Structures are given as C-alpha cells and as structure tokens.
Image (cartoon, rainbow, N blue to C red; front, side, top):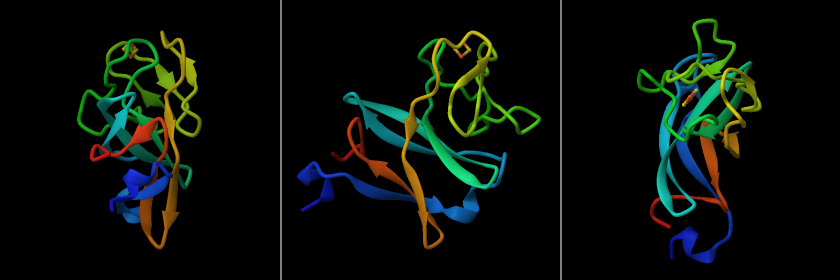
Length: 128
Ligand code: FES
C-alpha cells in the first residue's frame, strides 16, 4: 500500500544533497497543494536546505525567469523575476518589493546524503 493512503506524513526523496550548491540553482519538484499540482523548489543557503512553493507573495505566479534560478546575483536573496520582490532564503519572508506575504515553506531534511521533503497536509505527492 502506498504510504499516502494512510494520511500519515512521510518523507519523499528528492535529490542528492550534493545537487544543491549554496546560493546556486534550485532543484524543482511537483507537489499537490490545495488540490492543485504546483511547482516547488529546494535551495541551499548558508549550508541549510529550504524548500518553497514556486509562488510569489505578490501575485500567485511562478518566480523564476530562468529555470531553477531563484537567487539574485549576490546570492543573498530569492527574487521574483516578474516585479522584483525579494525574499529571505532561510525564512521565505518578504524583504522588499511588492510582495504582501512570504513564500510558502515545505519541510525538508537531509539524511544519508539525500534530501527529502515531507508529504504532510497541505502538501502531498501528485500520486496521493
Ligand atoms: S509577481 Fe512576483 S513580484 Fe509581482
């Protein structure tokens, strides 16, 4: 029986930990959020992994103008390409620009060299 049939949270392997470079490209993945298939992404910042829905807090649209590139040129902020909203990579909070709210975070963990995200309400795998 697939884990998602129990409604209990479970970890979903996403990529090797080494795939995420500090301030570098994100690793994208798909989740089901509020019943809809949505893009999400994982990044590494100051050694820690963070994951968010790919949905701007200004207008609910995807943020990357080049695939998987969310960091600004300084590597300090996540930037929405449409109107330039800036978010803190470690919290997803809006720091500058037109965003009215922060990014929606997903729980992650690194275990044995593998990055996982947590399938737990309101996030599910597409198969659930
Ligand atoms: S849609 Fe992201 S800043 Fe406007």
